[in-house]
Length: 306
Image 1 (cartoon, one colour):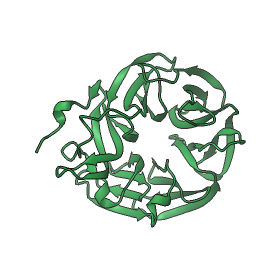
Image 2 (spheres, helix red, strand yellow):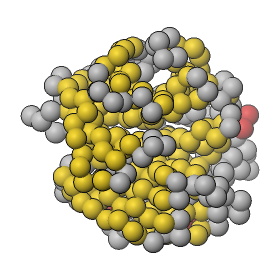
Image 3 (tube, rainbow, N blue to C red):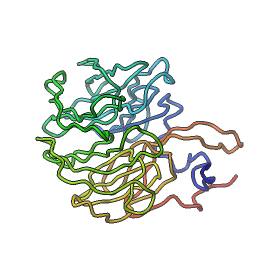
């Protein structure tokens, strides 16, 4: 069954954008972060890009020669005065790099497997999940920023895989999991995990598109004392750590966002999709856009007509 036409995102959202990524080559973005100076970093199939937080001008670019050959779920995160960039190219090797804030590579490593999820704590503990491979265990890996080659298995599963990760605090991980094999019939749930022992402390929610249900979560972030889960339906759903659904924090169009950043009381969403320009031409477009986490939704009257 095809999706119903959108009345909010089929048009090119030039007036609503915070930052237009496509003209700079940041095509198909999957992750973004803000460094200590307030500048934006975006990881995309097109490469790694840094934009000025005020003027939105391009400061640093590390373009990939063949964006279409890059795998999904590239990651960018800041830690102190460093930037961590992780991406997987053609094949099963993932590139891990640590860069200075001016874009100079300081550490570069390669490891097996395709990156899926990644988080880092204020103490420098790093957690990673990989895209599932049939016949292998499904693992959350852990290591330290100071020793990125010593990845150990924190938590292992056999009948479901770990995908998106959120570090609620230094002792608590939140993970989106899905049954395998991975397909449209896979069942998702959320798990609270001890970040030190890997023990599953709580499991909650179920697959679906109703309030409190999740449909292939793309990103999870802490917001005040809750977690906000953004899934493929475009809903930003709020849960407490007991697993109670506490409301819809925001909602955009389905299948459009790959991740988001929480800044103050807003989400900065990483968007990529097919849109229609004012002249009727259909194009692939990529951008960052803000939405308030107060129940806001993209509205029909936002659409501008020529």
